[in-house]
Amino acid sequence: MTDPTRSTTPAPPAGARTDAVRRHDPAARGFASDNYAGVHPEVLAALALANGGHQVAYGGDDYTAHLQEVFRRHFGPTAEVFPVFNGTGANVTALQAVTERWGAVICAESAHINVDECGAPERVGGLKLLTVPTADGKLTPELIDRQAYGFDDEHRAQPQVVSITQTTELGTCYTPEEIKAVCDHAHQLGMAVHLDGARLSNAAASLGVPLARFTTEAGVDILSFGGTKNGLLLGECVVVLSPERVRALPHLRKLSMQLASKMRFVSVQFEALLAGDLWLRSAEHANAMARRLDAAVRGIDGVRVMRPVQSNAVFAMLPRHVSERLQKRYRFYFWDESTGEVRWMCAFDTTEDDVDGFAAAVAEEMAAGA
Ligand SMILES: Cc1ncc(COP(=O)(O)O)c(C=O)c1O
Image 1: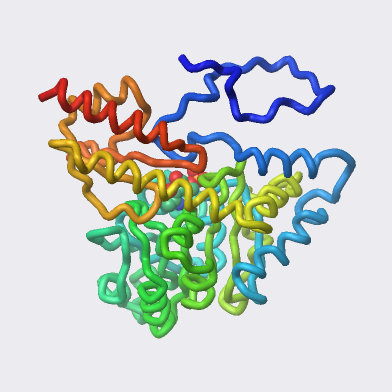
Image 2: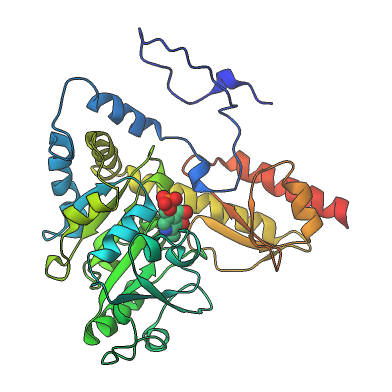
């Protein structure tokens, strides 16, 4: 075990005392998820800054008011931001705001809203999901057409929104042109476009363009903007880009149990992330660590990288018994139990040494398993 006193976590402020006891090794990191990472020290500092005194609850605070301006700098003058607790909540709230009771959502079969939200869009949002299999997690106009029909049919849930994920659940990244093609097509058919941007910063870092280029300028109407996976304690935002297509967001946020009473502490984290370049620095770093890992494991006999590495994830195939042994040393998940494909995620705090150590462990276990 590494020495916990070598932590990079800031010490509690002088004079603060706590009865809590540290119960983990703060220097231990794995490749399971960017959610496994802690809080970026700059975000922790911002939380401390927002503490003390009383502020109006439920979003009437000064931090949330200022956040509107911060998001408009990135997404343009029509953007309106609604902080929420988590990504599932952001997605379910946003999707309800662009659909009616008889509405349906077209999405990739691999979409988080379809596979990883416990049916919340269906049960909490009351929405029918119309899914399409994809090769790489990305929808195209042609793929959308597999579900975009029956607009006059009272028997069919009505496709009213297309939901895409950037970066996708498979670690791939839409180009701005690909998103624009999706938006143009959806709009021609009278549908809105929602973007699940749990890793939107990783996409901007990967593409090397501003956030607006592949959202506002491409025609996205509403998006879920992720913070937790990029160094926040918790929090995501619903960002409205086309107010004319969106209704009742404040009511839907509360109805969906996503209205934080102490919202200043969610908002100040996003200010810390987006007022400067923390969002980009952290995402660029996580992506760079994934590229380093990709390069390191590609050279190992018997390891196959399965998908383009365009964000902070590496998907790989190696013998199942080797993965299982490796899991005793480092945390990571099987992405597809049936095929044995694994997913290795990097985070803002993944170090080069972490990557090199992990790649060496992969090589050792492959050699031992041969
Ligand atoms: C693509 C995507 N969307 C949304 C989420 C948000 O999920 P949560 O509700 O856990 O914050 C995740 C988290 O894994 C995700 O990967």
